[in-house]
Amino acid sequence: MSKNDLISCHERIKPFIHNTPVLTSKLINDLTGADIYFKCENFQKMGAFKMRGATNAILKLSDEQKNNGVVTHSSGNHAQAISLAAKKIGIKAYIVMPSNATEIKKIAVKSYGGQLIECEPNLAAREAAASEIMDSKGATFIHPSNNMDVIIGQGTSCKELIEKYGFLDHVLVPIGGGGLIAGTALADLPDVNSETNISLKEYKGKIGTVIMFICNHCPYVKHVNPTITKISKKHHGEDIKFIAISSNDVSNYPDDSPEKMKINAIENDFIFPYLYDESQDVAKAYDAACTPDFYVYDSNLKLVYRGQLDDSRPGNDTLSDGADIENAIECLLSGNENTKLQKPSIGCNIKWK
Image 1: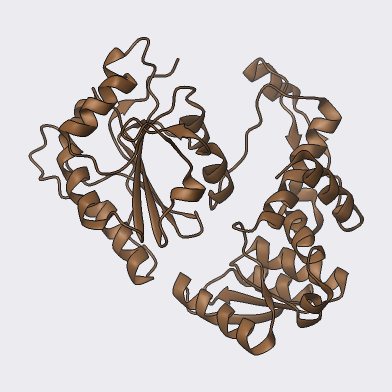
Image 2: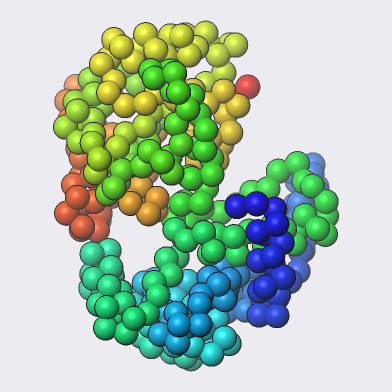
């Protein structure tokens, strides 16, 4: 995506969206000691920033594609956005929603003109229903997040913010599926094993990707390293891939230097990339808090699990078996929804600069 792509997108969708207001709060500014600006996308048409990406994606379609309509699967805002954008542009929208989706959102989809198709509440059922519509209607599928035209559309919100207030020190973005932030943040990190740079978008697994924030010196990480190695050797391949990242400040914690990362990888027989996040930007983008910390993404880089490896800790006499990560991976491989309680990981705080 280039700057010109973003500019062109914004001009394209302007007739169909609101330039939403930016609000401030003196109380919050006083509490934080900073000037905070809230880009209020809750005032966007249909109530969310999703209207931007949905509109752009539909406008980019060919006339033939528009004639056949669009289809998506979503349990909420993307479903409404596609429905309303399609109505305004004058094409059909087929919306696959899980049967347990909020009733008010189903009503909204219908009121915006979307043709609602309900399915069982799991990813496999959603994808199967959408595929059937694509085959029978010739409709074009528009993914909620893993679609470049959608992503560029969402970016116009920040463009408006910067145009009004200039370049800011920080931009805080809420993460749902996590596809955009994951793909962007892990664009180019050095792997201490292969001494090449790794990009998640190029390296991700066909079915899922496990991302682990670890380090060399933390006793919590050392405790589970054998389990990490065992699970990765069991699953690591084209379908499921593993990536480890170390983001600690090496000036104050020299045991976490890239040179020692490589030694650690060899000693623990890591078969996956071990990446050095020198700037700590990746850890911040993922909101990583400790080592170890585990994330599991599906084939579309949607976050499906974040939490612990298992219940084992140094000194608690519980065997480390990787049960929680194993369950998350097995759910991906089987196409089932992960309904198990996701417990937060416990370990050493990331050593920030």
